[in-house]
Image (cartoon, rainbow, N blue to C red; front, side):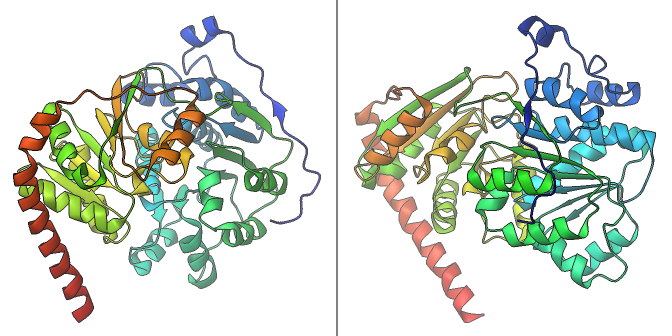
Length: 424
C-alpha cells in the first residue's frame, strides 16, 4: 500500500443509546428531504445501526471505517451521504465505489439509482465479463458514480482515452477485507495513486484484518470507526441447524429437505462450480425450479440467474461463495450449506443471506464424516452448539432410487458439457 501521510488511528464513534436507535429517522440523521422520500419509497422505514452511526459523521465530512455484519444496511450508510453531498455540489465523476464481485457492483448501482432517481443520478458499472467498449462509452458520458471491481477499473484508467479520476470527491471500498483477500492489493494501490488526496474515504468491511488495517493507514485521514458488531455473530432471528449424514447420501437428504420445506425459497451453497452445476441439473431432473450461479458462467447468465431468483421465477438458487456476501435478496427463507465452507467466516456470510432486515430464516449445514473438524470450528466461531435438524431416515431412504437415477442424468449432462468445452 502507498505510504501513509499523517494518517491517524481511527477514533471510535460514540455509541447511540438504545432508545435513540428506536426513534431515529433518516431526517434526524441529517439526510435531506428529497433523499428521505426516496428511502420511504424503497421501504426503508428507519435507519439501521450502522446507518445511525456512520451517516451523521459522514455528513460532517469525516472519513469512516464501518465494521458491520452482513445484511446491516452498509450500502445506505455510504450512498446517502454521497448523494447528499452531490446535491450540495453537483459534479460528474463524483464518487467511486470499489467492490470485490460483479454481482455486488450491479446491486450497489441499483441502490444508487433508486435513491437518486428523483435527482437524476447516473451510475456506471465497470466490471469484468462485459464488453470494454460499451463501458468506455458509459465512462465518456461522465456518470456521477462509478461502481467497479479494481482490475477492470485499472484497465480503463490505463487504456480508455480521456478517462481519469482527478476530480473525484469520494472513494468507497466496500467489503474491503474481501477485495484484499482476492489479491487486488496491487490494483488498489495503483488507484490510490491516481485519485486526489483531498477526498473523503469510506472503508466498509465485515472484519478488521491486518490487510484492512494497512489499507486504512494508507488511504484514510483521521477516520472514525463505526463498529456495530465486535465479534462474529449471526442474527437472532436465524434458526441454525446441522445434519450429520454419510457423504454418499448428501443428494438424497437435500431432496428430502426441499420436499419437507416446500413453499420456501432456498439458497444452496456448494464448494465448486462443477458441483453447483451438477446439483442444479439433478434437482431440475426431479422437478425442482433450481438455477445455478457460479464463476464459470458468463456475466449475462449470472445476472440472468440472479434476476430470475429475485423475481421469484425460480425458488432454488445453487451458488458458490460468489453469492455469499453483499447480495441482498430479501425473500430467501432457507440457506443450505450443501458443502461445508472451508473458512469458518464464510459460514457467517452464507447464512447472512437469510433472516435479513428483521425477518426470520433457517440455515441447515450438511456435515459428513469428512467435515467434523470444519463444523467444530464454525461452532467455536459463532459461540454456540447447533441443534440437529429433525429428519425421518426411513422417509429419506425411500427417495434413494429416484435420486440415483437423477444423479446418472446430471453426470451424463455434465460430461457432455465438459466434452463440448474441450472440443471448442
